[in-house]
Length: 458
Image 1 (cartoon, rainbow, N blue to C red):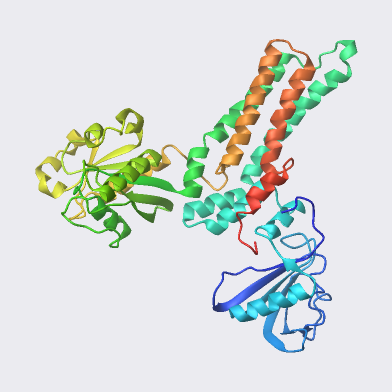
Image 2: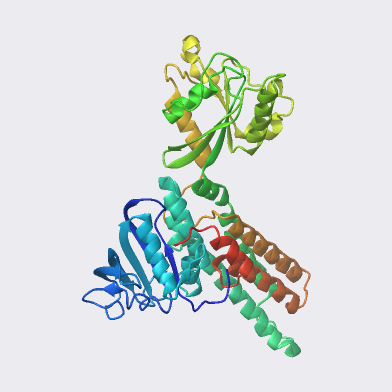
């Protein structure tokens, strides 16, 4: 994908592959309004109608054979998604019709769009900044209410506003320093370093607040990885089947039934949970079961939350497998005592068992309580609204970290009374890192990495 602005016209099928009621073919570029000049039969010409107009007609190929009856939506620059002249052709959903019309567009001078190229052009033409462009793919990929809200939040510019606030603050600091540098021979200091340090610290404090949202941001975007672990036959697969409301995993009283990790994605209160039913960990000579246990240990270490299932009150990880370190994993563990229907007399006094959640998969006892605890553990103290700027991207997180590090260097330089040139360099680097987030400063590699993840047609 070339970082430089392209003058050519691009086309792509924007709807999923396969047969459907309708299909949409998107075209954008300088020739978009004229590509079908000799192929569109209608009482109106595409190039003559107002922007945001839909016209009906027939498309014929270059041999005068009718391909299909279509509706063409016309969006004239700059009032379009890409900022360029754009048309969207709605056809019947036959794959053959789609290919015939796309072939015609290519014959008439368009070329196939690359992944994300329509959105890339929207970014290059100033229709959105880079964080909003990244939010487009998150909207497409959203699978729960929370993930959609998070993507819409970023697309609506909440993160952009926060980053712009940081940039304005840093530019103000830089302007004060550079003003002093213009009068360096007069030895004038317009603002004492102590005041600049306070202003830098204010920005750092705001950056720290935004960095703290990243844990929740990852949950919003990617969901929560939950490993269900425990000894064989404690009810791990039964619990997964109950949560999924389906027979996802094979249930048997034969130890070692689950040989591999079974994954199921479930939306609970708008949050995507990725449950992993792991192989029961025990000593075994069976090579297949041993490989399942090896994968289980890896899944445990990668999990955000661990549901430690037991059918007694023993929750000692080291007894399950020597590779599991309770000191490393204890903060992620929720202890769940299954088969509580066999010990109901103990449940009558739950205060003695506050660290353990008692459930019965068979009688579906305590499941609502388990889900409530799971939700509280996930959300922690996060308060999320539509107006809250949050970080969902590793790229944004690392850029903020770099900006903070350079601000700390600037503060250190001021405390040591270094020359303004050195301080200005650190502030510029902090500003550059902020600018990378919204795309004011960026590189072709970053754009390639972002837009290559899009589907063709978007």
